[in-house]
Image 1 (cartoon, rainbow, N blue to C red):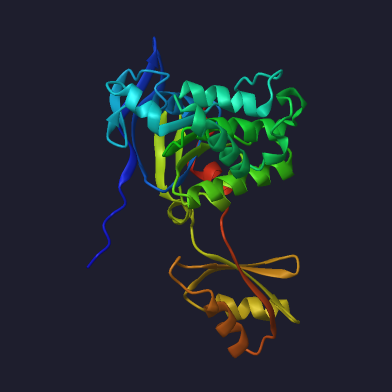
Image 2 (image 1 turned 45 degrees about the vertical axis):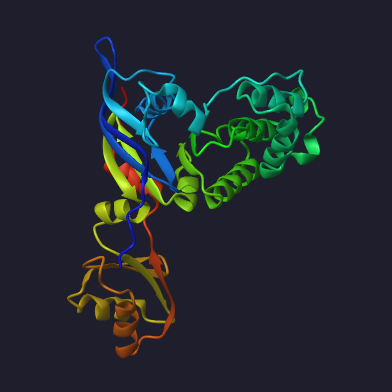
Length: 316
C-alpha cells in the first residue's frame, strides 16, 4: 500500500497582479503542501510580498486564482482569514501597551471568548519564548522580542497556515537563530509555513521546499536538493593527501568517472562526472594508487550559489 500524496495547503493557478502597465506577478502556478516549511526566494521587487498579500486577502489578483485549504482567497476571503496568520515585513506595535494587553486585544478581534483568552495568550507567549515579558511595555522590548511578539499575535487564533514576510529582517544573529528555532517548533506542531527571506543560508537549514521567483515569474519550485541538482554541473569532492599531491592528481585524472581535477592550496578539488557517482570512488582511486588519504569531504552547493546561478539579477 502506497502512502497518499500530501494534501495541498495552498494552490495558485495563473496568479497575476498588474498595476496599470506594470506586472508585479505573472501567471504564478504554485503548490504548498500541508506541513511544509516553504521558503519563498527572490530579490527585492521579484513579487514575493505581492504574492503573500494576495494569499492573505489584502490584495485582489488581476487574474488567476489562489485556493487555501479549499477556500478561494477572493470569493471566500473571510473563511481564509480564519485559517491564516499573516506577518508583514513591517508591522506596527502599540508601544504603550503591555504585552498581554496587546495579545488580549487581538484575541478579542478574533472573538476568542474572554474566559479562554488568558490561557491562549499565555500559551502563545510560551511558544515564542516571551512568558517572562507578560507585564512589560512593548516599547521596552528589543527588536527581536518585538518580532517574536508579532509572531505571537498571528498565532493567537491558532491558524493552520502562517505567511511570514521577512520575519528575521533586521535581527541580530542570536535573535535570527531563536526565530528560526521557533519556526521549526511550529512546523513540528503541524503548522504549514511560507516564509520569505533574503537570508538564504537560514532558509536552507529549515525549509523542506523552496520556490524562486524573478520579475514576477516562477523559476523553480520543489525540494531544496532538487534545485541544487538542477544547477549543479557535477558533484564536487575535496581531498587532502599526506604527501605528493601532484601524483595524487595524476592518479585521479586517469579515472573516466572523474570529470575534472585541480589543486587548490593544500587540497585537491575533484569534480565527478555525474551526481550519481559516489564520492567514495575518490578514496578508492587514491588508496589503490598508494596515496595516503587524510581527509575527504563532499562539497554541497549552497542555496545562495543556487540563487545566483538560476537568476539573472533583474528587478522590476
